[in-house]
Length: 86
Image (cartoon, rainbow, N blue to C red; front, side, top):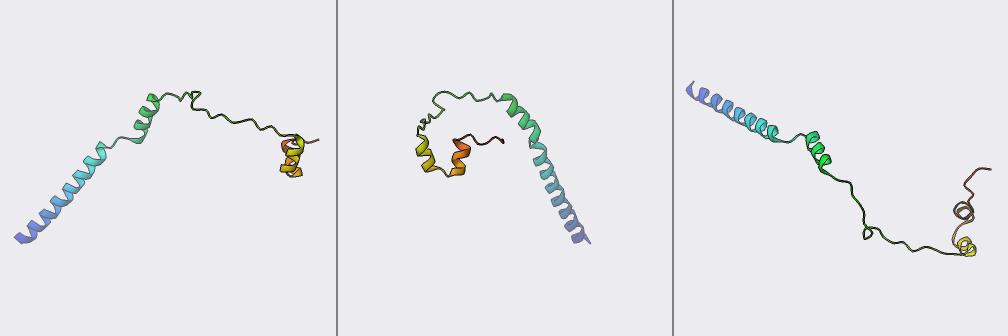
């Protein structure tokens, strides 16, 4: 009887310790919404500088070059402005 009592008391102690550790662990975790609110509150919007922006060279082609490169449908839409219904 004594051994059975010690065994169940030991099991109870292990279970209680595991629950206490779990509760302590989750109680210390920050809440996701609170963390996000603080992060958003402290952030400033990005302001791009001239160094951040990439320069893109302007493509200059004649209509004949565009017709050669594009299909008739692509040319009609991209270069011929055929996107509006009649």
